[in-house]
Image (cartoon, rainbow, N blue to C red; front, side):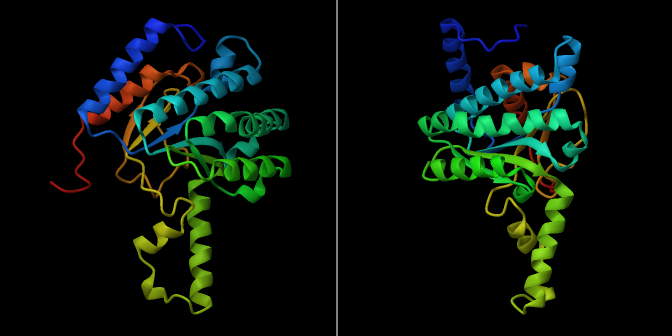
Length: 257
């Protein structure tokens, strides 16, 4: 398989046919979440610098956002940078922060062209100030868009999210705004970073790993999960379509019969 993303007209025509088939089937996932894993291993296998893995991963993210928007998906959540990723080398973290800042600045025009609205979940105040400024501008510049909601999980950890929600609720109890008896699943869910956003219907995990990696633990209790051995830099539209097709063939019971 080529490492570059195809732009062949014949391929594009086939892509349109596949998208149409998926839409006609119905049962399209409203919210897709993706653990974008494998940049480093992809680069290592090719004896390339880690930065090349992240660069190709950025190209993949751009293409998957396009495809999701074309399919009419409501929400796409990408696991961009976890709270645990700070443990990586200072050099790699600097690459990832530079990639994030450049993406926020460089991709905003295309997001607007495709009516995509950007949102961010995570401990945003823990990011470098230059990234925070770029993020704030991208959020403001896309705020009026009404198409796909692109949810980037950055400096995100599922346990941290739950801790932060508990702290907010505890403060509301302390101030008398809320009683402890009023705390329930609904109030906790509404206080998470994703408050107001429907839970993912489909979660895709790349790179052959079969774990959740502290990603959306509350929100994915009934999410359909699709694992693929494909590293994120070589993940393509047809892999997304395969995951959606697998989802469309499943029967979701949500604990019922």
